[in-house]
Length: 189
Image 1: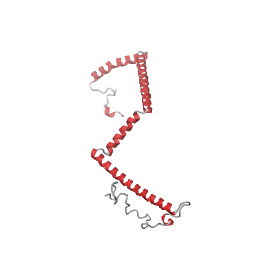
Image 2: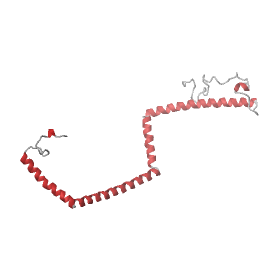
Image 3: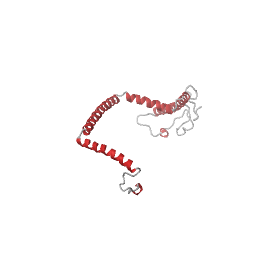
Image 4: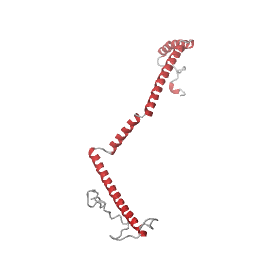
């Protein structure tokens, strides 16, 4: 039995019986007719009392079927959830599977393929441009090294190196940065 008091087995002789929560539906004793105004107002024009009664009866049957189908659907959904749980198909696993499937569909789309081709071409062109720029910079540095200014600077550094080594050896542990032989602790910085 369903918790709502309804039997949802479609083969049951009790299928489609209304539950107690359907108290707002007007019901007349069997074999009697309900007045038109009690069931929802005056009859529409061109509709006889018998036709209205037949339509009300059909409406009740359809509403009962809808209620039964909702209950069956709820039971089927619970059963499917139980089967998924037993198979280890958790909502997180389902989400992962759906995301993986969506990603695959995106990767197979024409827009993705065109974008991938465009980015690949742009990457190749960028690599070529950087390679050309690196070659140009290397050439410029080589030219600069062969310039007269750089040669003059290189000679000055080469001449300074033996002087620094000689001064250090002659003065021992004196500070090269303070010509008046004061300690570094008194330096302004």
